[in-house]
Amino acid sequence: MNKSPLHKIHSASGARLLPDGEARALLTYGDVPGEYAAASTGWVVLDETDRGALSVTGADASSFLHSLLANEVRNLPVGHSIPNLLLDPKGKVRFILELTRADENELRISTEAGEAALLSQALDMYLFSEDVVLAETTEQHAPITIAGPDAGEQLTKLCKEPLPEQGGARLSIDDIDVFASPAARAGLSAWTLDAGAEHAEALWGALVEEGARPIGRIALDSLRAEACVGQAGEDIDDTLYPQEARLETAFSLDKGCYIGQEVVAKIDTYGGLNKRLCPLKVDRDDPIPRGTRLFREDPDTGEWRDLGVSTTWAYSFAQDSGVVLAYIKRKHQEPGTTFRIADGPAQATLLESPEHDD
Image (cartoon, rainbow, N blue to C red; front, top):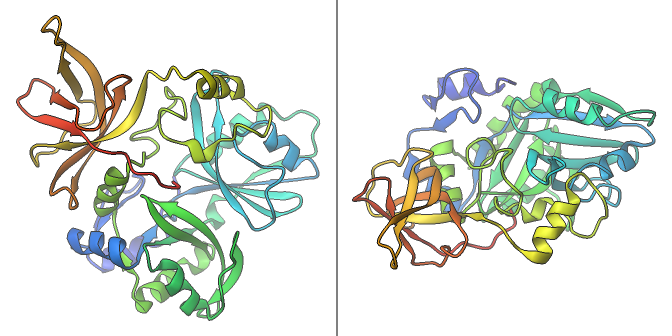
C-alpha cells in the first residue's frame, strides 16, 4: 500500500493516525466537531495520497477499457474524470475506481489504496493482441481533495483564474503545477488536486495556509453516513451488485456491452434487488460493530426476522445520535421503519436516503 507522503506533516501537527499500512490513516487533527462544521459550511482538505494508480496507454486503450468497465470510456473528453467500476461476469463489484482521460491515447485510473496491482492483473487477463500498455504509477500519484460548499470558490482564488465549467484542467497553485478535476465526497461537492508525490507537501501547505481545514476519517465517516455513501472495503465488497451499494453514478445503462452488463441491465429493468444500503438512526451513542444484525418482529408469526446487517457506524452531528449504514432487505426500506439491533434493547430507525452525485 502506498504510504502517504504527508505522514510526517500529520505526525508533526499532532494528528491521530492509524498504524502504517492502514488505508485512510488520518483519523483527526483533534477537533472532530470543528472538522465536520468546516466541511458542512466552508471547505476542508482530505489526504487521499495513499490511493493507487494505473496508466493505460496505446492506440487501443479507449476501446479496450470501454469493453470492460461499467461506465463511459470511449466518449470521455480529454481532461474529464468519471467514477467507474470493473464488475465480475455476475454483475458484482470487483473494483471501484476513478477514470481520467489524459489525452487521446492515455487514460489514468485512480484506485482504492493497495488495489492498483490487483486491478492491473485483472485487466491484463483480457489483454491479447491489443495495442495497450498497463503501467502502475502509484508512486507518482498523490491526490489531495478539497470539499465543501466553498471549495470551488476558494480554488478559484488560489489559482487566480476561473475553473472550467466542465471537466478538469491544469492549474497553478503557488507555482505548483496541479491537475484539478471536479469530484464528490461524502455528499459534498469537491475538487481532486494532484501535483504528484514530489509536491504533495507543498500543495497541502498552500491549501491549509489559505484556510482549508484538514479533515480525518472520523468526521468524514459522519458526513458520509448521513449522506448514505458507501466506502469500498467497509460497506462495499465483491458480494454486491452496484445498485445495492448505490453506485448508480459509476455505471452506464446506455454504453453497450461490458463485463456484467446483462445483469446490471436486468436489475434496472425488472428490479429484484434483495437488499440496499440505507442510513438508520440509532437510539444510543454506543458504536455498533460492523456485521451487527438487524431484526424486525413478524406481525403474523411473532418471530424475529433477520432483515439487515450494519457496515458503518458514525456519530451524526445532524441527528445528534449514532447513525449506521446497513444493507436492508427489500419491502423493509420505508423511512421510519424500526429494527432491533442484535439482541436489543437498542433500536435503529430508517432515515430518508439523500440524493447526491457520489
